[in-house]
Length: 99
Image 1 (cartoon, rainbow, N blue to C red):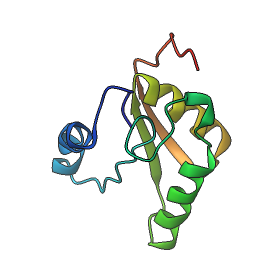
Image 2: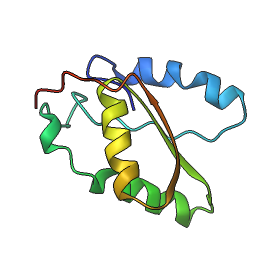
Image 3: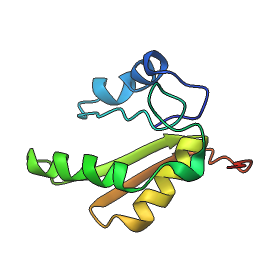
Image 4: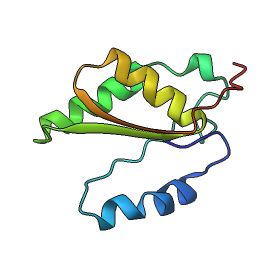
């Protein structure tokens, strides 16, 4: 998950290094994407819980979460509340989240 200024195209491009390293990647748009909230406080953790549940149903045993900027703060929050997330890569958690 990326910060508020990243659209789907940029998120997919930025996940290339993980895909090239052999990881399976699920890119989640969580903020400012079409149909998503423009307020951070309105993005429920259940959104990631559903993604984790689907990954587990499809045979994934080790699940990590990666976020940049406001996505990093959201990744930390989700990992603290969802025990099935066993790895966090939080890059530059935003310190200016206003919402």
